[in-house]
Image 1 (cartoon, rainbow, N blue to C red):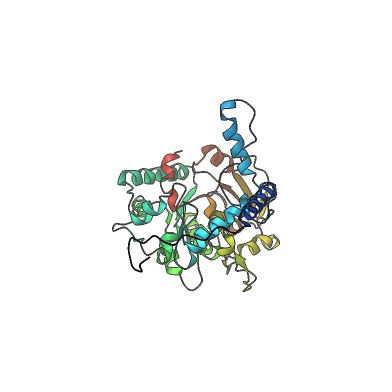
Image 2: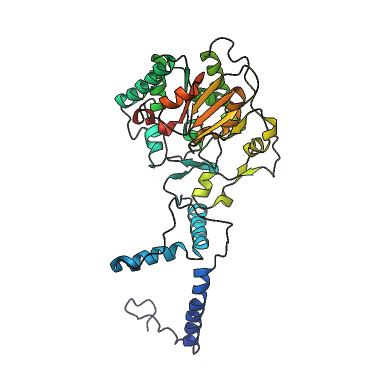
Length: 388
């Protein structure tokens, strides 16, 4: 064999060790023994479960026989004991090593910021980047529906206040990935806000308020799709100022200040819904500088108490016995969760409704002094699809 000769064959590898068959047999035996353990034992117990946004498949009935095998496999896979561990390892590698989101509707931003892309995954494209256009006629339909509600309520002597909570990427675009750029034209939220102003609807522009309130302390969670208590407090104060203006003079004498629970560094930590959705909440934790849980835990400090008089699971009511307070109905989504204990302190009775449609029967039954409607930016078109 000549060194450097391209026609020279590579050296023949040495023969396999004598114990090679025994090693393979041992490996196969360990796999067979480990399979039942992985199948029926969950090493993580109940400490971690991936959010798959679907129900676990049921064990199948015998018929039809043609699909029994696939249905059994799906049910077995959902109950595979090591499933949680394997998913945790997969998601940790995908998110922690490759910096890619394991969940299609969650975007990994800079400095461990997570962004919710909406139920259809296009909210960023639609409401920030301008890659999916929302027509003027669509926004005009929303403005017309909100005006219709204002006229209906005004005819009954009821004030009407509307607010739209901006998405996290609207208030904190600086932590989006570098490739994400804002659209060249005004956002649908800005265009709709201008239409509502033209129609003289009492609209609370939280976009401007939140931007001006930004500082070292965050107004939105890094790991959650919602604002935190500080952001909600900014919104609360602006909403209540508009409510005070919309009501007859003197009807609401003062606005109860929002609570500011003490933050304990190192102890108050939070891992939000987006961290849980991508399956690695331990990798995405943040200081909870305004712990909302402490507000909920201190119910005795608040006047408003829950009244369990509603048969509809989408409706909840609170009463406050301070004399002279007005009453209200609040149409809301999940962004209003931290608003509930804040708003409730200002009303003798307030009913919260998780619905997009204003119900005339509920209005007639409650006869509130004011109706507040809150919805998040990604649901911008919802009122037009849920007319009165």
